[in-house]
Length: 283
Image 1 (cartoon, one colour):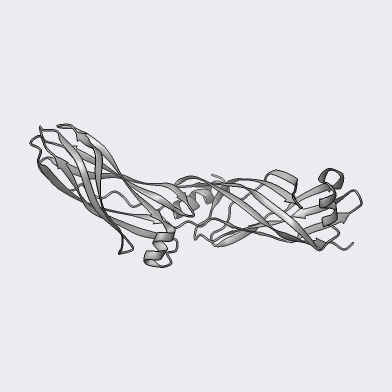
Image 2: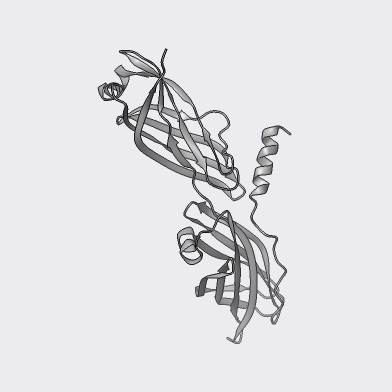
C-alpha cells in the first residue's frame, strides 16, 4: 500500500460519521420496524439530506398499508423538526412480506445555525416518531420508532489569489506564475481528485485546464498552487498588455473541484473575481 493510499484511507475513515443501525422496534400486531442503513445525500456547503432506510416486516397473515407518519427531529438535543406526513397513496406491506421505506431528513445549515447557533464539524440527529398502518378492517395501528445518526457540517474551500509573480516582461509577452491559495476550514482532510479552471486577465481568458499534482487539502489548513505560463500579448490583446503597465488589474479564476468522500463524490463550483497585484521579480 502506498503512502498516498494509506493517507487517503485514513482521511476517509476519520470523517466517517454514520452510526451503526439500531435494533428493531418491538412488533405491533405482527409489524416490526428495523433500521437498515443511514445514507447522507446531496452534501454541500448549504446542507444535506440524512435518509433513514427502514425495513417494515409484516409477520401477520393480513396485509397492511402505511398511510402516514409523524416524527420529531432533535439535533444535538435541541428540536429541529416536528411534523406529520400523510402519504398521497398508501404504501402496501404484503402479508408475510417486507417493504423498505426511506425517511429523509433535509438539513439546512442556515436553519440549523438559526435554531442551535454555530455548529462545527458534525452534529447528532435523533429521530423519534410513529408510523400509522391501516389493516384489512380499515383500522389504524401505530408503531413507534427511534433512530439516531451523525452528519457532517461541510464548508466549501475558500480561495485567495496571491500577487501575480512576473519573472520577465517584454514587448511581446510575459513570463508569469499565477498562485491561487485554497483554504480548508473543515476539521478533516479534503481528498481532492481534480481541479479544473479557467483564468482571465482584464476580461480575456489566458489559461485553462486541470491543476496537476497532489491537490488534497489538509484539515483546517491551506495549500498554494504555482501555475507558471508564458503570456503572449498579441494573442491576449491590448487590454491584457495594458494591465501590466499598472500595479494591478482585474482577474477572474473560475472552475470546479471534485472531492472524494465517504458520502460520495462532491462537485464544488468556484468563481473568484478580484484585482490581482503584480509582483515583479528583480534581476
